[in-house]
Length: 188
Length: 188
Image 1 (cartoon, rainbow over the protein chains, first blue to last red):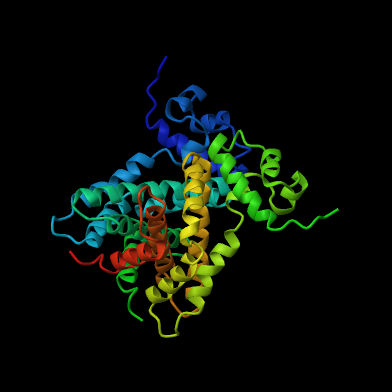
Image 2 (cartoon, rainbow over the protein chains, first blue to last red):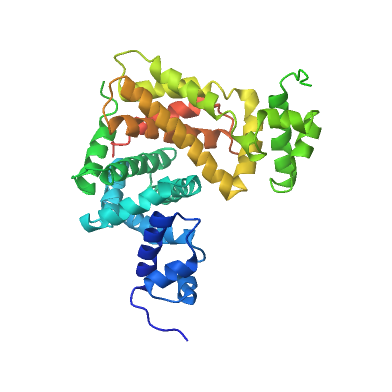
């Protein structure tokens, strides 16, 4: 029996992150996540293969935003301008109302070295896909890989600032700050 | 009884990487590593806590090279010039005769997602330490973190090129190529 679950995946993600923050990842069971989300364990396993995957399951969509931004940049854009378009397309996923959830998720990840490594892996995957999109635009190597990785460095730095305690500024502004810093690295 | 073992750690590293490449990490035991290195298991555990650590155990010295390079850059160097000095100090560890060993190690890591994540973690740690050294020089955030991460992006990209099949050029030349690419990202 497959019941219709309005945004079951979204509720499972929220329930899992809350429980991870309250109890730790180890002590949280799939049964507890499903119960808090108001669905069955079977529903959980329709969306996720294990409890840790909940924290990373939107990786494909996440990366695609950045890639589409690069692809849709004007044909005459410099590599860094194309990367900038990618970051602007990606940051749209992180509207002000998502900051608190992002903070809780980051706290969970910061408490677990294995999850920190997986988060780095996720961002490296986004950079790889952006580099491929830059090569499609005719950007040669190593410029394509370096542009994509420098862009992800800007994004990750801005994201960490965005979810830091007491930070009032929003992500797009912090990303622009980072891009300005990247452009002026050569200035003493 | 502690016997003197001339470069036991170095021989254990070499033996471990060879065995990992031949048999895979899972199938390689500490006993086999120690035997091939001509030492006892007890000697192995004087240097390493587990077999995977052998692949990453020189992390502290590795990072320190980059940091010292940043610290010793001229006082009036731009952030990117200081990072460049860090990369040049780090690349000294990878003389031509180390390329084959670096290739074998990379093959082992590429076959194992957990080790790939740990390698990313290692390089992120080097970037963190370089960023701290830049802040010590008076570079503000986010420029310090972005400069360090962009520099590590250049280094990692050059390193992957260096150990690619058929690559004849040496690491310093590939790093300079990457630095030039980073400096010209804004040019369409």
